[in-house]
Amino acid sequence: MSASAWLDDAILYQIYPQSFADSDGDGIGDFPGALERLDYLRWLGVTTIWLSPCFASPFGDAGYDVADYLTVAPRYGANDDLTALVEAARTRGIRVMLDLVAGHTSDQHPWFRASAADSDDHRYIWRTTPAAGWVASPGSRPGYYLPNFFAIQPALNFGYARRHPEEPWRQGVDDEGPQANRAALREIMGFWFDRGIAGFRVDMAASLVKDDPGHVETAKLWQQTRQWLDSAYPDRVLVSEWGDPATAVRAGFHADFFLHFRGRAFGSLWNNRTGTHDPSWGDGPCYFDADATGAVDEFLAEWRDARSATQGLGHVALPSSNHDFSRLACGPRTRDQLAPAFALLLTWPTLPTLYYGDEIGMRYLPGLPDVEGSTLGPTYNRAGSRTPMQWDPGDNAGFSTAPADKLYLPIDPDPNRPDVASQRTDPGSLLNTVRRLIELRRTAPALRTGGEVEVLHAGYPFVYVRGGTHLVVVNPAGERRAVTAPVGVWADLDSQGVTVADGEIVAEPVSYGVFAAV
Ligand code: NOJ
Image (cartoon, rainbow, N blue to C red):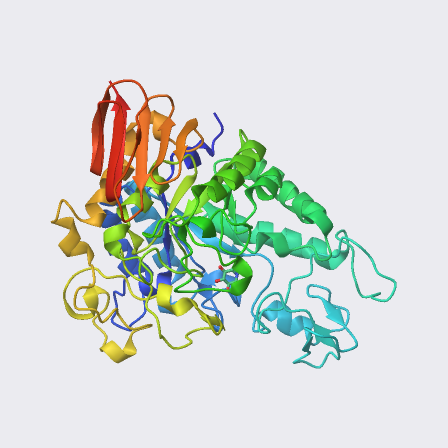
């Protein structure tokens, strides 16, 4: 068994540090605040936390514009506060992963300031004449730099896969600047690994080598990085933001996410086009709509392809949502409809990834201002998925003691907003449902990540058997559905509105059930 096999049993939990828990009353989350909530995460069954970037930054893109990879942002605490969080998590059996923004830095990073002042510096990508999408040098160096996302995020130079006669400034992947950047990534990772970090989620992992058909050179870069990792830090993991597990896992990542911006696997499940939405993601219905017009086949087809390409090499990670996409509770999909979604997330062979607050059914909050670069388009404001965690029914939902107008983002003003404290004491709450499903996954080897699945009915309800022993029924439809049951006697392990009897599965509106062969 490999040293990083712990990922096989992981329940990942993404924390957006700004909004998780504020210990010092400045309205922004911090490490000591997160530390105080570790017992909650352990109670929930989370095994691994992933923190969105928490490094020094001007926060033009919520910290995805890093100004110093080796120093955390003062608003979250000091480096020692992060290591204290990591140590406190370790004593509770929880690992901590950070976010590696590999493709670009902030334009305030000293590397970029130096590059903008020195025409011989090749850590970034420069050209001498203007061109669409390139940004004028802010320094004494003449010319234009290539941004990787916003203009404030200059692309680090990892070289081009192809040279071009009219673009003599293109460098190859083996040139000095690109090689210095590769080495820098290893140094950054090693620095944090030596402080107990279990791995990284790698931002825009596909973006490194430019003009790279099929991502061939980008894949070589990550394969080389993986070789280094396996010999220097064999128990650490890299999980990519690529959105194409077949390519990313073969490029060396331990897992890659299904995401909203590539393919339809993720969108065909969750995207009801009422929160964040970009027309390029497709306009079809999604499976988790109560009007039952979606098709789980879309998800299945992509998952089967991804699975066969990654089997034995790594995992396909499925997030409940994330800081770039609507929460599960969004528009007409309310928290009362989320139990079947979590039943799928926590019984399917994909690596389950919970976005903070989804476990209590926090909703995507529409109509918020553009905060730290959250807005990407007229129908695309990520702020609605980044509001403060709702801990209790008290002031600021227990997130912070700051005045309400000093909070990073407003708290959901709904008087019926969900919160952790209220749901913990209610056995029928979404939170307790999620906790039970996590516990089931932990105790039943048949349900684990990467294990076998046989689909019996790909519709409403969605019916499958895991590992030959565990029958799962998921019905997001707002109406009752019945299908033939597999032969055998099935014991109810955990269900809401589903019965299996007399050769028939009956699924009430918005229901799920997990059963074991007797
Ligand atoms: C993907 C991150 O998830 C997103 O939040 C960020 O804005 C871009 N990459 C740029 O780093």
